[in-house]
Image (cartoon, rainbow, N blue to C red; front, side, top):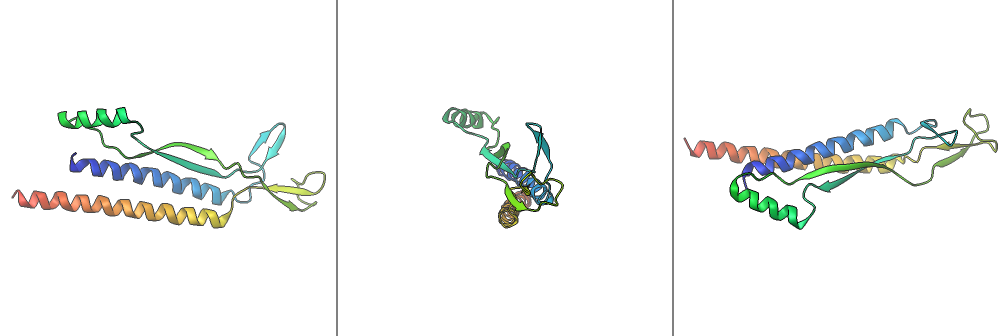
Length: 152
C-alpha cells in the first residue's frame, strides 16, 4: 500500500465531513421553517436531514480485488463516502399558537424536528473528525517531505 493511499483516505473523509457540516448548517438555518414542502395538499415543516456514510470498500471480494490490484500497482485507496442523506423520522414538535398563520384548526403549529443541542453535538463531532483528518494529511505530507530530504 502506497503512502499516497493515506492521502486519498484522508481526503475522502474530509469531503464527507464537509458535506456533513453543510447538512448540519442547513438544519440550523431551517430551525423555524414551518413550510418546506407540500405533502397530501398541506404544507409540512422542515424535516431534519442526516448524512449516512459508508466505507468505500464494503465486501470481501472488493477487498480481495483491491489487494490484488495493489500488487500490480493499480490499487485504489479505501476511505469513506456519503451513501445518502436521509430525513430524521422523529415527529414534528407542536406549539399552541392560534394566531400563527400555519396553525391548524385546533391552534397548533407544527415545527421542525430540529434539536439545536443535537445539531451542536453533531457539529462538534464533525469538526473534530475533520481536524483529525487534516492532522493525518499533514503528517503524511511531512513524511513525504522527509523522504524527499533523505533522497537528496
